[in-house]
Length: 365
Image (cartoon, rainbow, N blue to C red; front, side, top):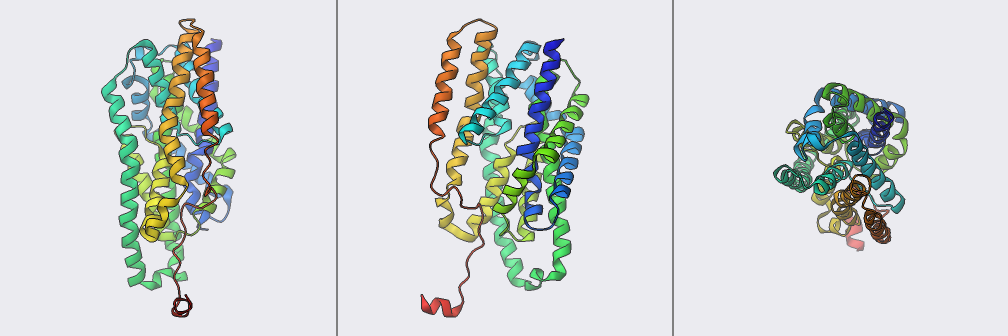
């Protein structure tokens, strides 16, 4: 009984951290652009969107994480504790080292580590998930690149769209797409916390997604202030039309992935959308950004980190093989070294408005 209570406590804590980090960023564009003036209202809308997304559509991804990577038969209460603890520990250590990790990738990595330890793994499902981790963010980049080119043509053809008359309807559009992005985050990310609980039979899918969605929403509202503030400041140079396009792209791609039960890195999708818009405006200058170093760190380390921890925790706690302690310590040391890889351009925002020179400035140059 104590282990079951502990599993729910860890799952709830994990869900709150998901809300505080990834989900809270969903309304960053609406808040950073000034479409929503008060931060608390941005966080409230984010929390509402997350909960509705989790409650209405979080079941498919929960099924995937609970039974389609490893068999349900091996997901006992101790294994649930190992999966959730591995994912949480990976995120905690990475945060200390300043390395951003994806919660979806961390959770999948923890489940795969358990599967490897038991020598039971559905490789086909895992391969599809990994390919989607690469494909969906890249698709977000190219969609944002193309749509931003179209937006620039529209804004050049209809310059009145930059006037005050259009600000209100465009602000409403940004808020709506931000809400849908939060909805998509709830659909996709709640399974990271409750998928193992569902697989073990401790809770049903319906109750699990509502339980997890509530804690993700609470985390977004009460702990997401810093994230939404930081994220908003990074993207203030986006126009309202660009902001709504980026949020809309992220929402559509993540909702589509969720309907097929594929856990995808929501933050990476949003980041690649912003980078796509930036590439359309800035061209080759964008490729010098330090953000690419962070993306590579995230893609490579997220699943690998939690995989190593969960695999060795199974060896330690189930097989009583203490050699796993040394492997975990060695991997933590490696992450510590990687944390020293800090690009010089860290403070550079993801997107900067392109500089347009006047005729006189061109002559002076």
